[in-house]
Length: 215
Ligand SMILES: C[S@@+](CC[C@H](N)C(=O)[O-])C[C@H]1O[C@@H](n2cnc3c(N)ncnc32)[C@H](O)[C@@H]1O
Image (cartoon, rainbow, N blue to C red; front, side, top):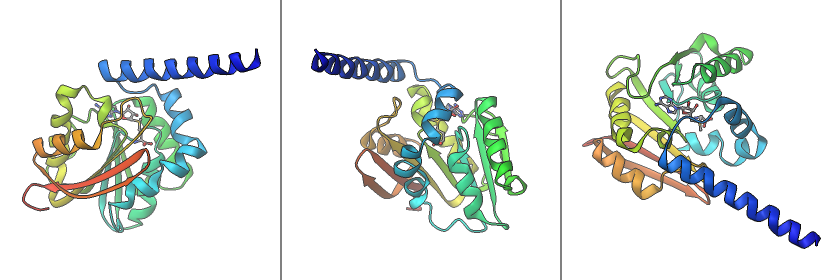
């Protein structure tokens, strides 16, 4: 009897995951902030899917202007702000104002707001001028944008990157909006990026790219 319950619970969990994954694929949309807060700040995520892998391909950020698109509650942005140091600047944007508020609280508590600029805006139309960033980072965010607009979002990242600037994207499974590496390579090429480097480990990959002709 106990065994049957165990299989039942496992089956329900599997079905639940499948439903979330299918709905994430069919109707991509930003994850509600309460769910984000739970998933993005739990120790498993922070240690396995956290900033070490996300920022591995970004290189030394000291003194640079670094933008994270889709900051969520600010887990990755906090590390970016530490790494840019006193002479650099960290920027973050998210379409959900309550995510931005939580990210602001997190960075304020860490004493990092003096080197940080946050905005509530869409990744398709960001409030920064052309060629104003050295590095743009996207972690588990592109899949939340409808598939017809993903290349546009990458082109908007390209617009704010200065010549020679770097885009770093990280995706991990089982994020319901996960984009496979082969699809991501295709999207980046369509947006006019050349692939520079790829880092992979089980359930996660990170890819860095530069404006075409600069890879
Ligand atoms: C899964 S969370 C990841 C947060 C953060 N990058 C991290 O890894 O901790 C994705 C975030 O992207 C944001 N997002 C989704 N679509 C967006 C868009 N069109 N413009 C800006 N942000 C967006 C969501 O609101 C959400 O906070």
